[in-house]
Image 1 (cartoon, one colour):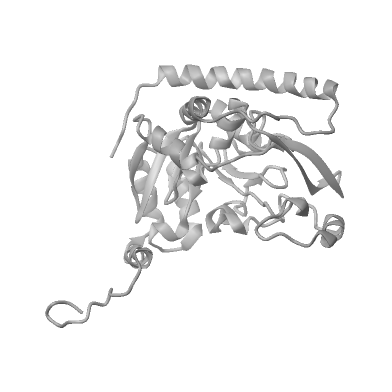
Image 2: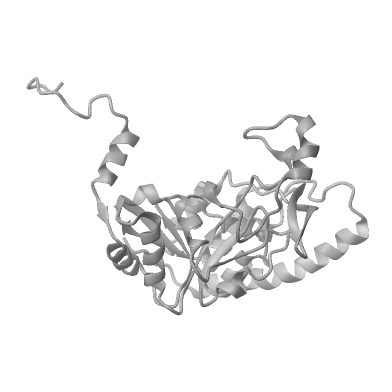
Amino acid sequence: MTRRGVEDPTEGTSRPELRARARRRVLVTRRSLARELRALGVRPGAVLLVHASLSSLGFVCGGAVAVVQALRDAVGARGTVVVPTHTSAVSDPAAWRHPPVPRRWWTTIRREMPAFDPRLTPAAAMGRIPETLRRVPGAVRSSHPMCSFAAVGRRARALVARHPLSQPFGPSSPLGRLVKLGAHVLLLGVGHESNSSLHLAEVLWGGLPSRRQGAPVLARGRRTWRTWIEPAHDEGDFEAIGASFDATGHVRIGSVGAAQARLMPLRDLVAHARAWMHAHRSPHPRREAAGTGERSRRGRRAGRARVQGDLGREVRSSARRRSPRRDA
C-alpha cells in the first residue's frame, strides 16, 4: 500500500520480475534492431560472433527469426554471423554432473546415444537465437560434437571447416580463425560469463589441466564413439576478466532493444584476457592426462606451440596497434 492508501501493483514483486515486465513493454522489430546494431558499431562486411538472450531484448516482433534477420541486415551481404551451438549432453556420461546418471547406465548410453550430426542435432540449450540461425538456408555448422559453432554469410564455410576434437576452443578451432579474420564479439543482453571466446585465451595462456572426454560422432557416415584429451576449461573468472576489459576503452557499450549490448574486437579481447590470466591465475601443476605416451605428448605440444605462437604474436601485436576507446 502507498501512503495514500492506494494499492501498489508492484508490491511483493521481485526486482527480476519488475525488470522483465519493463522489457515486455519495449516493442522491438527487425528494422529497429538493425538500426541500433549499426549505431552500436556493427559495420557492413563485419564478421560477428554473437552471444544473445532473446528475452532481454523486449517484445520482439517475430521473435528469434527477426533477431537473426536483423543481425544479417547489420553485417550485410558480405558479412558473416557466427553463434555457438554447443551440445554438452552429447558427451561421456561419466563427466555428467548436473545431474549425474547412475554408473550402471554409462555403457548403454555410450552404445546407444545418437551420433552428433551438424544438420540434425539441436542446440536448444543455447537459446532460440542460435537454434534459429543454424537452420537458416545456407548456414553451416562445425563438426565438434560438444562445442560446435554455426555460421551464415560470406566467410561461414571457411570458419567452420575444421574443428579438432582435442582443441574445441584452440587456435585451430573456429575461434582461432575468427581472430585471424578480425572478428568482433557482440554480447546482447548477456555478460562475459557467456563469452566463449575467452576460452581461446585460456588455451593461449597454457595453464589449464587436461581431461579425458568422449562422444559419438559420424565417421564416413557411420556412428563411432571417439575419445580424446582436451583442456579442462574454467569460466569461473570470466566476469572479472570482462570487467577488466570493459575498463580498457576497447568496448562499445549501448542499448539494443531493451538490452545492454557490448561490441568488442575479438583479437584485443583475447590478448587482454591472456595477459590477465598470466597475472591472476596459477598454472595447473599437472597439465597432461595420465596414460599418454611421452613421445605423442611432445609431438602434440610442438604442433600446438607452433599454432599458438603464431596466433599469440598476432593478438599481442594487434593490441599494441589499437588505441583505447569507449562509446556510451
